[in-house]
Length: 297
Ligand code: ATP
Ligand code: MG
Image 1 (cartoon, rainbow, N blue to C red):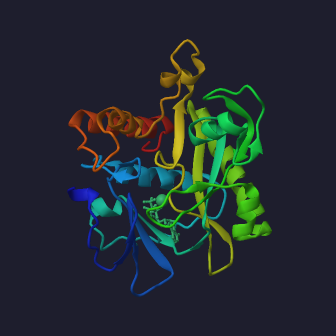
Image 2 (image 1 turned 120 degrees about the vertical axis):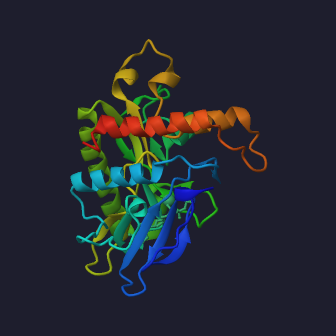
Image 3 (image 1 turned 90 degrees about the horizontal axis):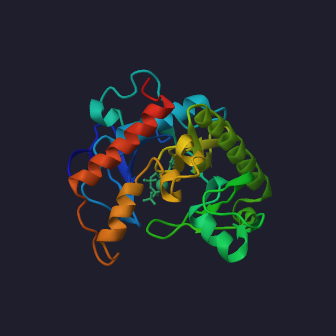
């Protein structure tokens, strides 16, 4: 690992924790704020791969900011002008200064289409997170309406687990569970409409919310609608039913990395280093979503 794939030491910030992809810092003088720094690390099958994808951290951060600007719910971003004066420019480009929230232990997943882990449960039980769906649905089918399918946010190193809405009520209480579900569905619909205007389908995504201790408000946190937290498809390819399903549903994310690993690694021990061609193609895929949505424009 080199450069933007590593956890930097930052003047004015103390490192608190590192996930597979992001590093979190706190301010020694103001415990209400955090700095979330997206690295260029890429993970698949619960492993951090080597090397990273150059530019990924900056792109995903720009994508989050772009969406935070466009969706109408309170969010955690707090960046007064000049906030990043001490951060090196390359780190600032992949950092967000945020209000420290009391995070709910639930990932708020919304699906507009049936695929991935939802499809697996549907094939076995006809449901997704306990929600009964019409019979006869196939991989990639649009659902009659978007569904809220929460997951329990497991402690670090453990797998997140899909849960029913009843289980979510046990975890966070009825009022918050309903509020989180309604907010997630609303933001999903809003974002889907924006993406659709740009020829991109938002198939599913994951939000993380927390409570802002300053005002008690349920606030959207974490990264939002990035290609790490969401599955995006090209609407034109999706509509072309003459194409193979794999092509119609090729997502704007690290699918290239997953596919390469699946045929070059037996999932035992450490994964092999990614070849440069795979890194370049993945980079281009992230860039394409950026351009399609018009993030840099
Ligand atoms: P991994 O992604 O490796 O499974 P992770 O989700 O814990 O682990 P990251 O996503 O890299 O790690 O790190 C971001 C962490 O910061 C998450 O735990 C997320 O819930 C938390 N977080 C995001 N925004 C806020 C916020 N405003 N206040 C407090 N915590 C936050
Ligand atoms: Mg995370």
